[in-house]
Length: 511
Image 1 (spheres, rainbow, N blue to C red):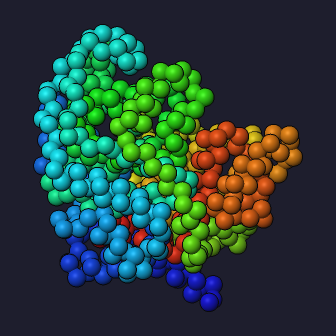
Image 2: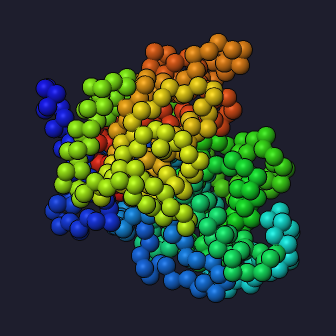
Image 3: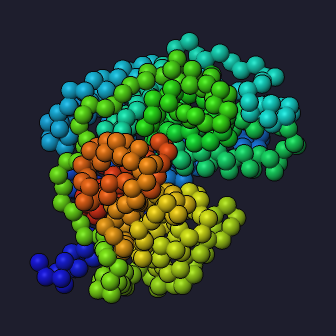
């Protein structure tokens, strides 16, 4: 294939993307063709959650708690026919070749089916109106309650807590369950945990602005969420700091008593959450709650679905040469030619702040690595960028060493945001993209973590030559974030991703 033909194909694939908020509804025959075309996506593909309908969003905000708006939610919502169950859909996907038979995974689907059957006969009790209390915030946050909460409903089904390493099919199983929920479960959410916690922090901020000091925000927020949701599906559940740990403890306790059922995926067994964290003892009751109120299930079966063979799409360019700069610019020019004018320094609003986009059209944005990661941007910033633009170019990505850990963490957060919003990503980098986080030093510390890195590399099917023998990361959570980023970069470099990135019908993968 000539360079021109190759470029034309990449432009064709990428130009199919349209921002979800700007896409007109399709006819049913066209929609069915789209569903069929993306059914070949690998099982661990993670579509963003569908939005609730307006009827699901009625909420008394007298307690000063705004309705939940998950950052990832998209306009279209897909509903499986009432006769479809997790097991029937899973067997259909096996029969048509979309998924491969896996005995261990079949057992997990059996647990999804059990919960599905229990939900058919479950109706969440009415959630009483919030009563705002005024003890100290810290007293409330760390578990002291003056108000008596109701006991959980006697027929409340146990939730599911699915944990496993990258590539074990967590997100596919979550989608399978969520999209086949019984039809009477209309109040539901599927959201990446990171985006959910950003929303909770916004609620806390809004609450403090409208209530006297010391008023308890957790109960009103828990009530609001319980009013809006009978079922909540969390992807990538994790606990990284003491504030999140304490907020989660209270939220889970309250929402379960209000009759909410949770299905969660995580990289960690509950007993390993927030391991060695500050004041972890205060979080132990939440771990006990997870162990008692959830069916905790290990997804690891020895099969890594992200290692399945697939064709690569040429979206990552290295090293940093004038030739690659010109090629990236040609792709950018082609994608923006019919996508509105290219503007400089567009401003996005994020929590009342202005975030500058150096170069962008309606759906495409371009950053240098320094513009994207050289400033103290947060996950909320990156989520907003990936919601606004379905195709993003990042140029001049350096190889990072131990002195660049803050930059590396931000870039990983950006990768996660791209993945969760299914954004098309083009990159130019100093070294192969999978080596940007490697450190070729031979310090004693790097030798000590070699065994862990070897395990990570084996899981991802990546060799020493591809990724380097060591990582600049040291802690267990850092290493897992590094592994997840590498795995996601692999997936985001495939033709399947190129064909479906920015697609508003991503839930159709399993419907």
